[in-house]
Image 1 (cartoon, rainbow, N blue to C red):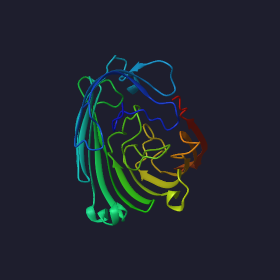
Image 2 (image 1 turned 90 degrees about the vertical axis):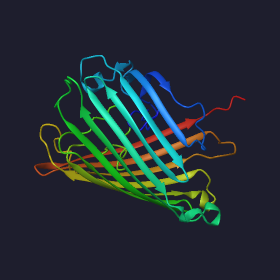
Image 3 (image 1 turned 180 degrees about the vertical axis):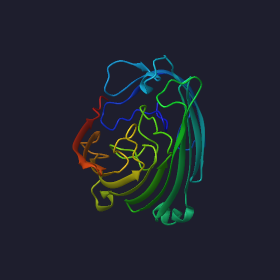
Image 4 (image 1 turned 30 degrees about the horizontal axis):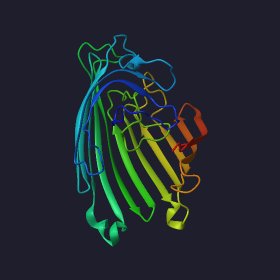
Length: 289
C-alpha cells in the first residue's frame, strides 16, 4: 500500500503496514495512463509497535475507525495530475492533489539532454462529524511547489512549502508528500514556511555503476505555539546520503545506504537543540534460482 498520505515509510527498513481491502487496476506498468484506487483499511501497525491498531487510535481518538480511500490519477507525455481522499469517520478527512509537468525541451539527443520538471501539490486536512480529536473543530493545509533540473546524472532541486496557521498536519501513517519533507522533519507545524535545496549525482556517468550521492538542506520558520508546536517552528536540517547498489555482477542484489542527519531546532529563550544521526542500512536479495 503506497499512496501520498498513507504509505510504508520504510526509510529505516521497518515499514508501516496495513490491513484492509484495496481495489486498483490489474495493469500498472510504465505505459499506464490512468490509475485509480478504492480501498478501506481497517488497521495499521506503526513502526515502533508489534500489534495493529485502528487508524483513529493513531490520531488519539478512542473509537475504532478505519480509513476509506478513493483516488485517481492521469499520466501522459510528461504530464501528471491526481487526487486522493482519505476519510476517517467522526475524526479527520484528508484530501490531496498534485500536478507536475516535465518540460519537453530535454527530449533531444536521445533523451539525454537537460530536463526540467515543475510540480505543485496541496494537502487539505479538516475534522469531520462529531470528532473528538484534539483541537477540533479545525481545518488546515500544507501546500508545496518544486523545480527539478537534471543533466547527465546531476539533479538539482528547489522546493518551498507553507502550512496553515490553524493546526499542524496530522501525519502518523507514512512519509509526508510535501516536497520539503526531509529524513527527520517535514515542516508540518502550524504556520511554518519552509524551503529545501538538494543536489544529487549518479556516478554511473563516471563509470561507477550503482554509486549515488545526495545532499539536502532545508529550513523552516513561522509561528511558535507553546501549546501545540513548542519551539519546532524554527528549525533546519542537513541530510547526506550515500548509496551503493550494483546493477549487475557478483554483487547484484546488494544495497548499502549510509545517511548522516544534522537537525537543529532554534529557540530564542533556550540554547538550540541538536540531533545528529548516522544510519546504515544493508539489504541483500539472495537469488534462489
